[in-house]
Amino acid sequence: MNIILFFWLIFSTVITLSVTNGQETFLDEMTNMRKTIEDLKTQIEEKIDSTYNELKNDSQVLQQQLTSLKLDTETNLTKILESKEKKTDCYTFDSTTGYGYKLLKDLRYNWYHAKLKCESEGGELASIRTTQEWQFVKEVINLGGADAYVWLGGTDVLQERNWLWTDGSPVSFTDWRPDFPRNMTRYNCLAGHIDFNWGWFDSDCYAYARNYAVCKIQA
Ligand SMILES: [Ca+2]
Image (tube, rainbow, N blue to C red; front, side, top):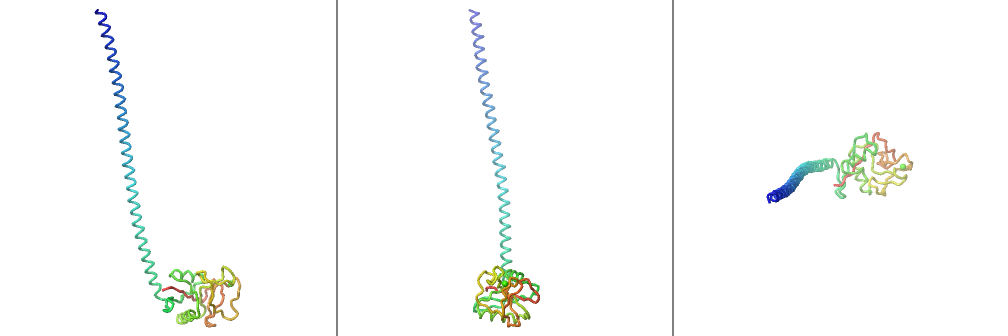
């Protein structure tokens, strides 16, 4: 009887220890898993925080750049408007058409320089569309004191004998001096000559000695 009881005690103790050991292993695994989950959660939260902060910083930098760009744009617009106001000062305006004209007196300009100068003021190297306009421009030229040649905005540089104004429109009104244009590929820019009451001739575009120029601008 004692022997049976003894074996029973041994058996039940082994079973109990085995079950307890299994429970502890399971609890350990659960604890480890929970810790892993907690760690992952912490890492994700940290990543979200750092990404949020980076985006916030980027957004602030972009906002600053945008503000700076807006200020630059407003400053440039103001400068352009101010400069345009200033640059129309010296123009003589024809009240019937609304166009103004100015004699450029810097004699260093060849035709291309004169064209760029007029365009930088918001206008064009003068196109002449009608007899009335040409009369008005000739008065501006004479009053301005031109004494030799004046550049006008016509050219046949793109195609010989096909004269165009700088906006690409055809030259329809003309006032060629006798025997002109010469229709030669080395004479492609339009100028007026004082000896022929500013009658037109086809000139070397790069000539500049004693060349005045007429700029034209819209009011
Ligand atoms: Ca030509």
